[in-house]
Image 1 (cartoon, rainbow, N blue to C red):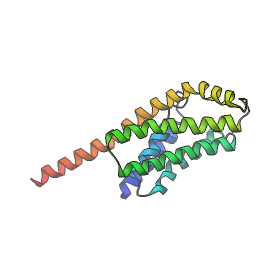
Image 2 (spheres, one colour):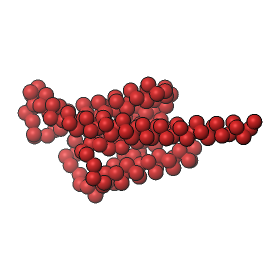
Image 3 (cartoon, one colour):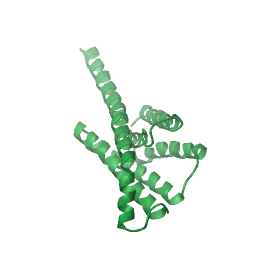
Image 4 (cartoon, one colour):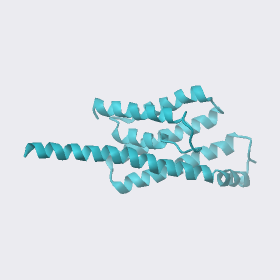
Length: 174
């Protein structure tokens, strides 16, 4: 990891922050993809703080919500960043795709459990939990679509640019 990657993660985090203010489908967000990206290309796990800081700054303007649910959102995103740290050592297209899909599922399971457990919208029994997850399926679809689009863009552009730069360097040496 060099300073260029740190700057890149900061820029991508800033884009994620701005994206929260642009009209979009609920849960169609670059945040989970940015967390994965930061985990993969950050020098250490501490670099996942940048996208979380961007989320916090946007929450200052958009409004805070129930603390326990916010902690579940931030915690699930931090776990996605840690998943990115694992992905760094095991990076291939299948693992990137699996991590992209897995991060959507992780976010869905953790945050909706928190909504059920800490909220007052659902009865606190298995039927209420099932209803909570069932009603969240449209949001899960948007999360999944966002993760696929943004991870494809982030990882595809970065890896493609890295490949082209390496090829150009090799061509210049010949």
